[in-house]
Every structure is written in structure tokens, then in C-alpha cells.
Length: 239
Length: 368
Image (spheres, rainbow over the protein chains, first blue to last red):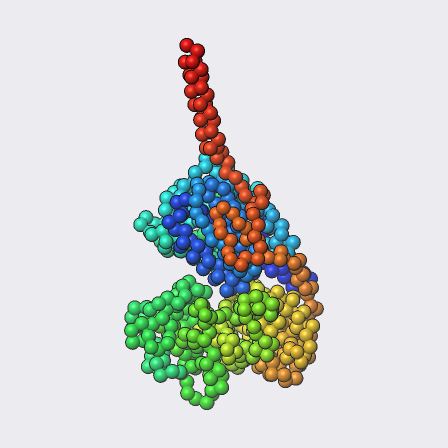
């Protein structure tokens, strides 16, 4: 999928509005239960912030997916101005990555088609994944490789935020741009808020530039480089 | 300038500012951060804007000094423009330097609290540039006359800058604030103004089609952008083709200035774009239009209707919000079961096996 560009020649001034399909993927497994309230409060804040800035909500259409033992599409891809309220997340279950990667793969095809039908110039999708633990399932890597497969023209950018029991080595295998792992000793409440704040600031900056802009640092986190084969952007882009 | 600001010199070192107060913004545009002042300076109502390092620092320092000097002047020259700019913008008050005298930032006035919403957020013009229907969905009602009054305020600032030969370049959704109570505006990031021309930083949805890549922004770029901002606020449309068609379709008496806006946005020759001063007069209803050849209008951006309301789905991990328009149980395609999650099945099989063995043992025991 080519990056959206302005047409040339006589169609020069026929400008399709650019759109960044954005997937917010949240770990809602049992280990997140102590942080459930902060998670919901912060998600509400993110939702309100995006809605308060039409230039962000019209550029970054958002879909919310939560996962634990299963993966659930909670909010279909939408301009968040059209979503009055966020649902409340209840944490329970295991941490199965494979299911969420498979769901993302299927949803991206559906959503990109729909955004194209709406007359948007659709950019490469971006996934922000938040997790506090290790995967419970065994075969998640093959699911992620299918999602990140460069032969699939709609393969997304994946940025991950890990705290709590999250493992750096695992994060490097589920990110295609940059991952962030909380520094030892960072309290989980701060880690959660900084992660979602980072996602929000990335979307605001992206809406101003008309292309995806990645944060290169997050307070309380250190960056995790993706495995070389997974990179979805040129390495120079990150320097 | 307020009394508090007059006590602060036009150049002040970072050390004299003391510890920064609350952070108002972080990593925003060309600034590392914007902070309230603390201690004795807290009452000044000023903010410290700390710049990112830039290769054009010398040019910026000189331009900033000129802005500060103009704001502090008392002479008759530029008096009218000064009054507008000091009242309605974050006009820089002082240059902030390090101990060697190198520019590191500036002091700017903070926007009045009337430009904040009930949640404390700055009320950006972004929220005005929407249709009446969108505004109503958020509980906001703005009449056509109110939209016009707000736009007059924006253009008045643009005209004052243009009259001073200053290029702003940063007209966009985020850099103007508005107050619904009195229809006033406040333009921020004014410290980046340059005389004559300035850097043309790419802004999504604000690109001047007649200013090529790599060309600096100038008065004509500013005319395009302020016209686009004004037109978006007046029409509530945001996509450029639809803005143009809304202007074209409107009646003159229903939308004063619409013809001048079309000239500024769609003149075939960028140097023929009417000035902001003429736009200001046109918004007042003055018939001041000079003939301008326009380019043919582009096709409207036709979008198929989106789904009536995005679905917020009820799942076993979520509680739907109260008042959600529509909820439905997750469909099979929307839920991916975990692979190899066979724990319960294995347990049942094990229990059956154990019971079978127990039964066999009982039978054997009974027959012996």
C-alpha cells in the first residue's frame, strides 16, 4: 500500500483527506486488574483529548481492541468524534497474543477497504499495543509474522509499550518500529499514563504532519529495538 | 503592556527566571516546552517558551528582537497595529538567553482564561471550524453572526501583521483560540513571525498549492492560509474543495467576504491574492473586490455516508457506556478464540479416564 500522495496534473487540487487507521490494543488480562481503574480513566482521557481536537480525530481514525484469553473488537474503526463515550474495560483471563494478532490482520483488511470507500487517502495503519506481561500462548510468533509480513501490502507499523512483567526480548519480536519497556522501579500507574500519553502525542504530531510520527522516547521507559527483519520503516527514519 | 511586563527587561537570562513553574506544553512545534514563571515573576502572567536548538538561531534572534522592540515602542508609528497585536496575540515580551547571551527562548503572555473550556483545555479554533450539526452534537451553538465576528478578529490580526511587513506562516487549527462569550480571538506562536519571508514548514491540510516545495513562505502564503482558516470557520467545511464550493454557492449577503475569500484561495496568480486588509473590509460588507482571475474549482470531495454510529461492542471484557447509541454482542468474525486453549477439555478427559479406571477396579474387585 503506497503512502497517500497528492495527485499530479489536472487533479492537483483534488485532495483526498488523509487518514491514519489507528489500532489501540490493550492487554486486559488478569494481571492488569490492579490497574483497571487507571487504565479506564486514562483511556477516557485519551478519548476526550482526541474528540476535543477535530484535526486529530478526522486524521487518526481509531479502533479499540482488548485482549486476554480472547481478543475482542470493542470499537470499530471510527472518527472518535462519533463515539460519545468509551466503554469500561474489565480485566480477566490470560494473555494470549496470537488471537489479537490474528484479529488485527483481519480487521485491517476490512477497515482499510471501508476507509477507501469513504474517499480517504489511507496511510499505512499503526498499532499501539499495551501489555504488562508475557504471552500465555505458544504460537503467537507465527501470528505476528503474518501480521508484519512485508509481502502483505497493508502490514502495519506496530509500537509496543510494556511494563510490569513484560519482557524486552518478547517486545522486540512484536514491534516493527520501536518498543518501550518501563524502567525498573517505575510504578505501573505512571507507566500506564505515560504510555497512553505517548500514543496521544504521536497522533497529534501525526495529524500536523499528515504522516505517522513516532515518539523516540517516553518518560519512564527505555526503547526496545525491533528485530531487524520486522522493521516497517527505514532504520534512518528512527535516528 | 501590563505593569508586570514593563518590569521585565527586553532581554533576560535564563538564570534570572529561576525555577520553572508548571509545564503548560511539552515538545510543541518549535519549543521544547512552555512553562509558567515562578516566584516574583509568577504574577507577571507571562510564560517562558524554551526553543529547540535550530540552525537558524541568528536569524530568529534578530527577528525576535524586532518583534519585542515593536511591542515595547510608544511612538505613533504602528500604533493601531500594535494595539491589535498586543491585545489579540501572544506577542513576545522578552528574549531569554543563556549566560553567553545566546538565544534560548522568550517570554510571552499567557492566554486569558476565557479562552479555556470548562475542562481547562485551550479552546482552539479547530473546534469552530465544523458544521452546525457537528457543533450541536457537542452541545455548542454558534450563529452565523458569531462566526463572522470571530473571523473578523482573526483577519484583523492578519491585516496588522501584513501592514508591518511580517510573515506569520503558522495559520492553522491549533494556533488561534476563541471565546464564545465575546467572540474574541487570541493568536499564539506569534514569536515566529519574520520580516518579509520565513520558513515554510509543512502543515497537513494547510499547504498553499501555489507555493512550491522548498520555497519560503511570504505574504502571499499568509494570505492563502488566513483565508483558508477564515473560510473553514465561516462555512464549517474542512476539505479544501468543499470549502471552495460552499463559498461559491453562498449568497453575498448571507456570507460577507465570500468572494474575496475565493479570490485569496483560488487566484490563478498568487501575487493577485487580495490582502488581509481588503478581506477585513469585505467581512464588514464593504464592496472592495478587484477583478481576480481564478482557477477552475476542483471537484467536491464526495464521501459515502459513514456508518450511522460506530458500534461499541459489548464483550465479556467490557461494560458498554451508558447512553451508547447501539450495542450488540460480539459477532464470531470480531472475536478470535485463543488457539490451543484446551485446558478444560484435557481436564474432563482426565476425569473420565480416572473414573473409568476406578470403575474397572470396582468391577474386578466385585468379581473376585
